Length: 231
Image (cartoon, rainbow, N blue to C red; front, side, top):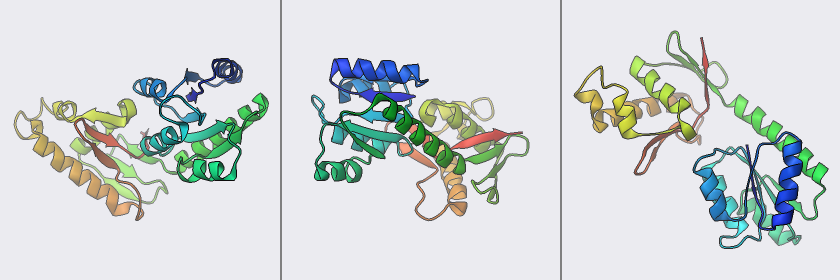
């Protein structure tokens, strides 16, 4: 899924048509606000962002995207050709690729395909595997093994299948409503289970890795590692 942010209507439509013809699922916006509206309902893998945008500029937008979607691919496409702009795009904006206009439509397709392949390979190499049969969680290198309780497995399954891997605390508590109407329905009990899960992940993660599950203020919890299911 690709987000295109370009304020020039004709150029935006031209790029959208060309990329769609080459198999990309494109959602276009003309500003940072427009992208925020799209991101509220769509999880994007790739972003193609112009720097000269109305309102919030493209550099600031790239920085926000990188903070919220660290595994996504960001391509800046702009008329700014100065070296200091390029450096800012990479260092401050967190861009993967910096393209200067005019860009050949065919080259743009190849750039996005190449970046998409690299991201997919990187994501696959970081995937955890959850066995649904024996509640075993294997780390990315398939040698790190964690044993989960049935309740921990239930939490992970729910987070993996949730939009943006995020669920409200109340929703997670309700998963156990039929098992125990007291302790497991409380947010305190949920916090303790999440803490135990984080500790298990941390025991086999590399130093510097982000927490496997993070708290989302005012909402609940988000799963920050990729997990696939095996039988």
